[in-house]
Length: 143
Figure 1 (cartoon, one colour):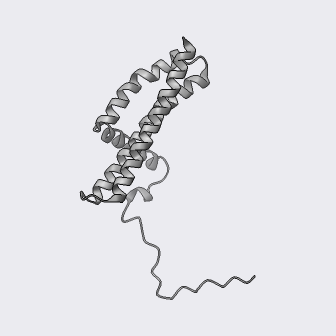
Figure 2 (cartoon, one colour):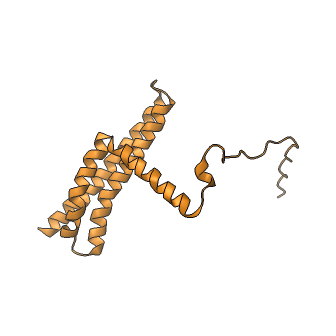
Figure 3 (tube, one colour):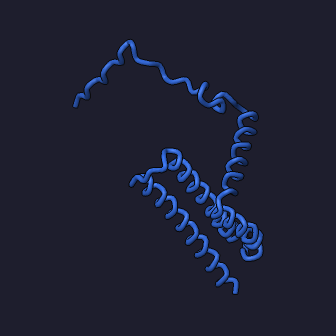
């Protein structure tokens, strides 16, 4: 079967956009890029700390992460216990990012905005249920 050739591009096609003027991070490389990316990550954690839900989960993590070393009987169990706690924090940060992006668009109600926020919230709920299930199972087996 013959496939048609793609249409040729016109001579006046605009070139690819130059992102270097929009985002200076794209011009960085090597250690400079890593250091700046680390700074952005710290800013994200600071912004997350401003959210009540993240702050509550982070404070719980301060207790649960060390407890995972006491409760876990081998490195795999420790990793699963600690990983489930960190997963909750990661999902909460992503949910907060979704909410911030939606809020930037505008304050008016829109079905798609609600849907995006609801899905982010559901992701947090599922991560909390997973974490709780893992921890309850580990505690049950430890007792």
